[in-house]
Image (cartoon, rainbow, N blue to C red; front, side, top):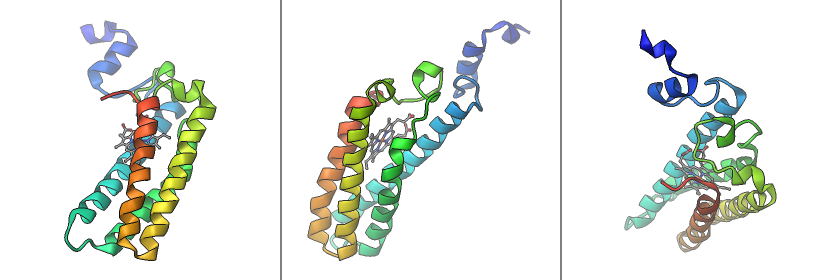
Length: 152
Ligand code: HEC
C-alpha cells in the first residue's frame, strides 16, 4: 500500500492535525493552549454579546470575566520549549514567541492587567466600567495576535 511509503510529515498532513510526534509534550502543550484560547475567545464573545443587550446579564458577564482573569496569568506558561512551529508542531503560534521572550512577556503581562481590570469592573457591578474595560482587553488580545500569532 502506497501510503506507507509517504514520509511521516506528509502522512501527518493527510491525517490532519498531528505535529511532530502527535503525543510529544510539545504537541500536547499546543493542543491544550488551543483549547484554552478557544475558551477565552468564547468568554470574551459572551461578554460582548451581553453588552449589546438592552439589559445585560451582569451575573453572566461576571462568570466570563472571572474565567478570563483566571486564564490570563497562565498564558506565559503555555509556550514551553518543544511546542513552537520550528519543532514541527501544528500551531498558529509564531517562532517570535520563543525568540523574543521579553516582548512576549510584556504582551502577556498587559493581558493579565487588562483581564484583572475587567474582572474588577464586573465584580463592582458597574456596567459602564465594564464597557470601558473591554477596550483595553480587546487591544491586549489584538496586540499579541498581531505580533505573535499566524495571520488567518
Ligand atoms: C500574549 C499573547 C496573547 C494574548 C494576550 C491573547 N492571545 Fe489569543 N492566541 C495567542 C497565540 C500565540 C495563539 C495561537 C496558539 C496556537 O495556535 O498554538 C492564540 C490563539 C487564539 C485563538 C484561536 C485558538 C487557537 O489556538 O488557534 C483564539 C480564539 C484567541 N487566541 C482569542 C484570544 C482572545 C479573545 C484574547 C483576549 C481576550 C486573546 N486571545 C489574547 C496569543 C495571545
